[in-house]
Image 1: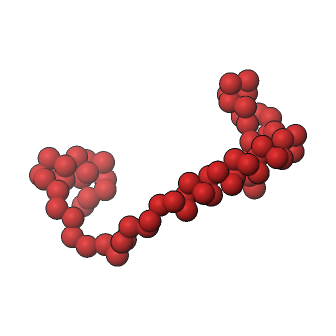
Image 2: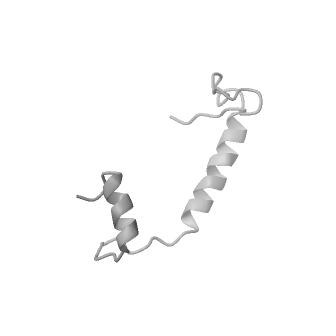
Image 3: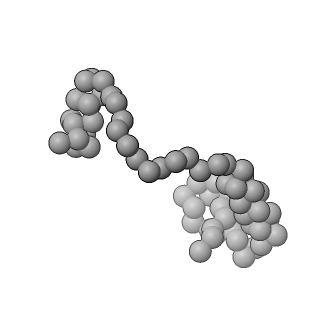
Length: 66
């Protein structure tokens, strides 16, 4: 479900404005879709990633590496 908020007037995102401004929401969705489709996906097949010892230690401390 899409949502639309005025973050200046409603920083807590209490009032979803999508029903009040459907044209604005649709225009924003079209812009977002165009932007997303402008990117070429990267090859995400994976593979070996080389990192230095410091980065490995930091990742291990955060629980990302065993």
